[in-house]
Every structure is written in C-alpha cells, then in structure tokens.
Image 1 (cartoon, rainbow, N blue to C red):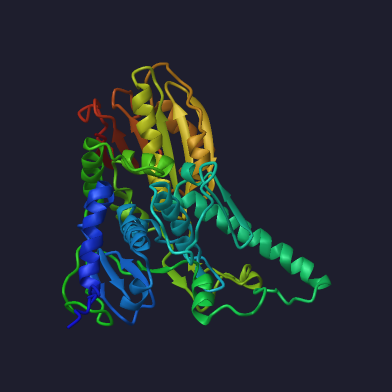
Image 2: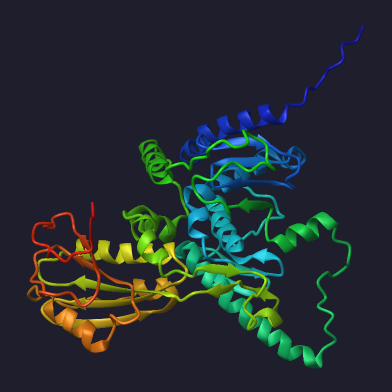
Length: 440
C-alpha cells in the first residue's frame, strides 16, 4: 500500500506564533515591540489594523494571502504605528481627501520606509516608497523626498500643502479638458484593489478613542472592560537597548527616531488643562471648512480660537550647548503634539536677541532656529519686551526654558511655566511661577 503524504496547513494562530518566533531570531527590536500587542481575529475587518489599546485586529483571509516575508513586514508595520505613538500624534489632524485620512497616508509612508529599510517585505498594495536617496514617493501627485530625514508631521504638512495646490491646478485646467480623470488605464482593477488604493494602504487605523474609554462593543473582546494603553516610551527604549546589545540596531528611523527618543516631556499631559481651556471647543463635520470643499478636501469646521503659546529660551553664559539642544527638542516635541498651536520663540540673556514666529507648529522652521546670547542672566528685559510687543494679549502662557540662575521681574507679564535644565535651581524661581518642569 502506497503511503500518501498529507500536508497539514497551519492555523492562523499557529502561523502568527511561527512568524513571531522568526521575527525574534532576525529582528529583536521589532520582536520586543510585538510582544506588547494582542492579535485578535475579526472577519468584519477587511485586512488588518491596530487601535490605541495595542490590539491588532486581522481578517484571516487577508493574512492567508500574504507570503511569510510579507506577514513579517506587516506585523512590524502595525506595531510601529503604536511604538511611534501615532494615535496620540494624529489628534487634531483630521483632513480627509477623497475619503482618505491624510494623516494615515503620512504615517504609512514613514512606517513603510522604516520597514523596507530594515530589509523586510510588504504587500504591493501598500504605499511603497522608492528607497533610493533616503526615500521618496509620489502619492497621487504629491512628491515627498528624503523620508528618512522627516518626521510624520512634516510629511503630513507636505501632503496637505501639495494636495491643495494640485486640486487648485486641476480645477483650473479642467475648464479646457474633458474632466474624465482617467483613474484607470484599462478599467480592470478589482473592487478590492480600488478600495485599497482609495484608502491609501493595506491596513486600517482605529485611533479615535481616548485613553480610559470603554472597550468597543462592535469588536471582539471583553465588552465594557476598561482598556489601558501601553507605555511605548518605556517599551521602545528597552527594545532599542536589547537590539544594540546584539548588534541589531534598527535602520531607517533617522530624524523621526532621534526626535522621538530625545523628547522627555509629555506636553499633552502638562498642558492639557491650560491648552484645553483655549483649544477649539468643537469639531463640526456637518459644516466643514467651505474653502476646501471644491477641492474634495474635507476639514471639520472648528468652533473656537487657535492656541497661541509664547516660548522664551535663556541663552545666557551659564546655559550649555547640550541644554540649548534639549530646549529646542522639547519645543519640537510640543509642536508635534498639537496641530492647532501657534508658537513664538524669543531668545534672551540680559537683553532680547531673537524673535521667531512659527505658524502652525512648523517643525522645519524650529530646527533651523539660530540661538544668540552668552551674556548675563536677567529676565526683566524679556517681560518688558513681551508687554511692549503686546505678546501677552491673546496668548495663553509663556513657557520659559532656563537653568533658574537668573534675575526675575517683580511682576510677570504673562502666566509662566518654567522648564529647568537638570542642573537648574527650583529654589531661585519667583513666587509667581505658574508651574515647574524639570528636564532629565
């Protein structure tokens, strides 16, 4: 009797376990991150995606279509959204173009670049960048170059600007054209492929819920259970240390990872009460921004005013270059945390030296700020300058970066948060201080 060879297919759960083991052998950094997410089968999801509570929901049919290498890449892709805190950083970035979230496109561009830079593979239906010259991509007529040197917020702003410019140009040129659009060369794209193309990638991101909210009843799991978010700041640091110890430092993070790792202050937490009181009170989707509707770009109408924050940087001789670098990094961190913050940065020692306006948290402009000073330490001229320029009118607070070894005016011109360097002196701060933060 001839024996038949029976090939037993792995279950989805077994395949995920096998893939996680292979990631652990080859990519320790990603493997440690993946240990902190929970995989949940959910056929109602079209493909795969994560939410802010470190739950990864997947459609088994989608995973079955992936090769082993593609599954490894997809798992690393999903966990990077959480490790880089995209749910938090996406708050307030609500532009949709043709039904596609522009922030989701931005994070997929960067995450896919990082995944591919580490020698992994991704499904061709994703937003796949060109890996030459630090990465570039042409997404629906929007060109993003040097991806490795950009953070998510920069990519988002570039997409937003170019989308609006392209729509304006197309609208003007359509007067002389047939308006057909020619979206498909042969008209034979499958419905599934068209949907993925329109959505902008192979996965979906459910980042809408805020920390501490109840579990969603329309997804598998324990309904009504309080859900907690993972402390990704701690997890990513341990993952990086483990990877370095065995010579597997991850590639491709560039400026994104550099800024992420150096930011010590949770600005959302510190400024939540102060900023919330002046933040837009309501996002009204029933009355979107009328200026962009003709371009098929939908932004909710915002009821309320923009938050305006004033920064001062002590550039006196007692402040080191390392401390100044930390100050700039924290300002970038705050700009990344909020999409509706207008910044003004003033440098000073005994006198005021520089006055920079940064509209809508332009990170590129903050990076290029030149710092001047090196003299004595006195904050009196700063507050006189603020009153003379009337910067205290219509602004919510002053965030003052200093070491504390400085002379203060008897009365402040504006509510002030002091951010002290590690060698700073809390005891020297004035009684009128609003809040104090100590840098590590």
